[in-house]
View 1: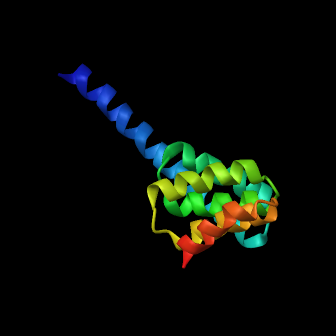
View 2: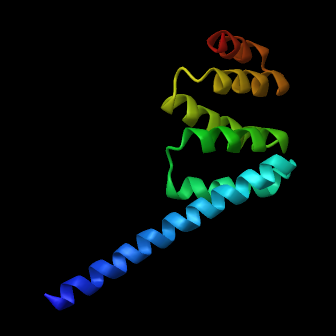
View 3: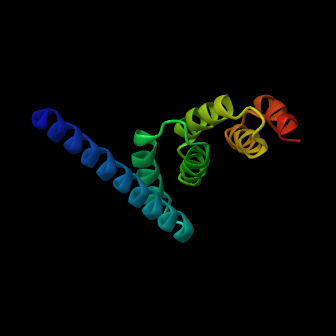
Length: 117
């Protein structure tokens, strides 16, 4: 009995440490985002996404950071994932439209802008 409890306790400690790291990564990402440090914000949001791959708030901030750095291909992938998770997310549709517009693809931008309205 005693030998079963120890691994379970260690497992609980590991989960607790992971949650704390994720929260500190998110706080750090938010601080970088607020300062307009897009590279470090994106890097920190990536760490958070590794722990929770379906966090719409984080995906939205990550996509915006990537757009600000002109990493359009990666931003499009993140926005596509966000829209998959939240099909009614008007901001995601609008940002995807901006991304298409900015990359000289106006015909792809129009449906995105329409979905944002």
